[in-house]
Each structure stands twice: as C-alpha cells, then as structure tokens.
Image (cartoon, rainbow over all chains, first blue to last red):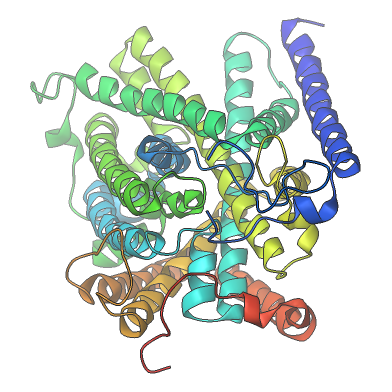
Length: 46
Length: 468
C-alpha cells in the first residue's frame, strides 16, 4: 500500500464524514424547528 | 438582511418567516456564471475542431458566442425584474405557464446535475493521470469523484456567500492560467512558438463541418445563463445580475479567443480535435514545466468551480419547484442557520453520484448540452412574450437590452442550427432527450399539476399583462 492508496481511503473516509455530517445536521434541523417555519420562504418577498 | 425574515415574532421568540440570504454582489454572480463555464475552455471545446477544422471551430466559437450573448442580454433583462431563485423556471412560470415552467425547471436541474457529474469525473481522471505520471498506475478515480461532490455539496450546504467567494478565487485563478499560457507562448513573435502559418488549413469538411462544430462550440459558454439562479440571494438583482452576467460573457469571449489562438498555433487540427485536455497539452508542448503546472492547476480549479456552481444552480431550481408545489413541498425548506436550500442540495448529491458512475461521460454531457439548448429556445419565445405583455415602461426593469426583437430572433435561429448540428452527431441522444421531457411533461400534467396552487403562482408586483 502506497501513499496513493492511503489517499484513496482518506477520500472515501472524508466523503463519508461529510455526508454523515450533512444528514445529521438536516435531521437535527427537522427535529428542532417547526416544518411550517422551514417551508415559510416566499418568492419575491424581501 | 442579516437575520431571518420575520413577520410578527412567534410566542417562542422564533421568527415566523425564513428566506434565502441576500448577501451576494456582482462579483459572486460573475463567479457563478464564469465558474460553471470555464472548464469548457480547458477541455471539450476542441471537439469542434475535429468537426470543422481549426478555422471552422473559430467561426463556430464566434457564432455560438453570439447565441450566448443573446442569452445573456435576454436573461439580464428578465431576471432584473423576476428576482427569484429558479431563474428561467420562475421566468417561465410568470410569463408562459406551469407546463413550460416545469419543463424549464427540469432542463435546469438535469443540465446542471449532469454537468456536475461530468466535472467530478474530470477531477477523478486528472487525479488518476497525476498518479500515473508519478508511478502509480491504475489509480481508482471514484473516491476523488465522490470527494469532489461531497466537499462541494458541504460547502453549498453551509452558505452561499462562502461558496461563491471560493468560486470567485478559483475561477479567477483558472482564467489567469489561460492568460499566463497566452503570454507564455510569446504571441508577439508569431513563428517562435506558435505556428499558425504551418498548422492552419482550409475547412476540411466544408461549411457543413462548421455547422457540426456548433454543438461543441457551446462548451465555450455553456452555463453562463446560470447567473439567474442567484437572483434571490443578491443584494440588488437589478444591478448585480446584468453586471455579473454581461461581464462574465465578456470574460468568456476573451478566454475562448485566447484558448483557440494558443491551441490552434501549437497543435495540428487532427490531434487537437480529439485531445482530452487541449490546454494542458498546449502547455506541455511549450516545454515549460512551470506552464505545465499552472495549466494543470487551472484545469482542476476550473472543473471544481464548475461543479460548485452547478450544485448551487441545480439546488436553487429544485428548491423553487418544491416551494411552488411542482415537486413535493419538502424540498422547499430553507436551513434556519445557513439559509440555504439544504434539502434540495442533499437530495441531488446521490443523483450526481449515480450520473457520474453509471452513465458514459459523452452521453451525460450531450444530455446536459441539449437540456441547456432547450432552455435557450424557450428564452427566445419568452422574451417576445415578456415585451408584448409588459412593454417598456409598464414595469421597472433593472436592465433593458437593446435592439429587441433582434436578439430573440437571432437566438431562435442559432438554436435551430445547433439542434441540426446535434442531430448530425448525436441524433439518438437528441431523440432520447426529447422523449424524456415528453414523458416528464405527461407525469406533470396527469399527476403533479393537481398539487399546484394556481393562484399562488404569480408573485411579482406587476400590473396585469397587456391584453389580459
């Protein structure tokens, strides 16, 4: 196993961590905020 | 606007309304538009040389440049009044109708998500090439493809300001790489490095070759229309969108001309027409190690900037369609802290990964280009209708494009010519793309349209259209 193999594994690991972080954050937002509030954005409103 | 948009405060103290953050300026709009496109200067445009020869490619480059100038002018005017995420989708919703809007929204999502997949594949292939040159043959590019998508999606998830500031830096660096290469080949001494006199020949396949080259000449500019997606997040849409889009178009016309001039002066058209990384190859041919490194970095940066902009744009289009119930409303959520369309960003990640791993690159890119072309065709009709229904003076416009209806007519004629060019090279893909959108339209009409609240569609503070 050389540096490129390690780099490949690191790329998989970092990708997985980023996906997990985003999923966990999205799940946390869904739990902590009211759905109507999250969907309250209106087009054209300042 | 630094805090969440509020109506009356709720009992819990939480604001009752949330919106995307208005923090962007013209520089970010430039970075979004040019960032998506510039990778086409580093690779892809040169297939037009294979179709029409070097001169044919240059003619196609300028003719298609005219097509995109029309796109930029039309987009700048309409978006300076329809200042909402979704860009052309929102324009279609206001000016044409729901079915057109659904189709345009889908064109946008498909064009950008597929382009993002193509960009990520390029990053993976470049990593594989570097590993090969450093003695590690057969590096698996997939982890680097996934990492590119994951990292850029994460950046987009965390906020639009940082996303497009990063895009500005790497796009500017990639553009600078092209300028450095141009200076590096001493264009003021024509026969020293550049050999145009020896390498340029007449049109090898005649004028039909020039028309066929138009499909690939789109790579020089494909995606500049993406600037419209930032309309809801710019501080002043009337100023930033026209300024960012038009300056972006000027940048691309300069970059395209420099790219052609350098590459056509270093490589015979037979080689250039099938090269994978023509600008990097050009740097190699100069014999300068420094230029080689600069162009390699430029190529990687351009691919990353393109994927980054594509994630931004596809998610805004998807988010807008969710917000209007063209898709499940769940996608219309805004992150309370980062103020981004976080669910749309998350949802499109696996789709981009699937495109990257399951579909052949040339088919993915052809689908992306054709989706873009369908969008441009819509713009020509849209502009005619827009000026007819809301003539000058009836609503406030941040920008008024000159010579109407000439740009809309020129755009339509050039779109028809480019469909013909695509038919010559990718007839089956053209038919498949049309079939896909017809099926999607049927799904929308027979299944999804019943969820759309027709009364809520029109959100701009405009008077009734003329003749209503």
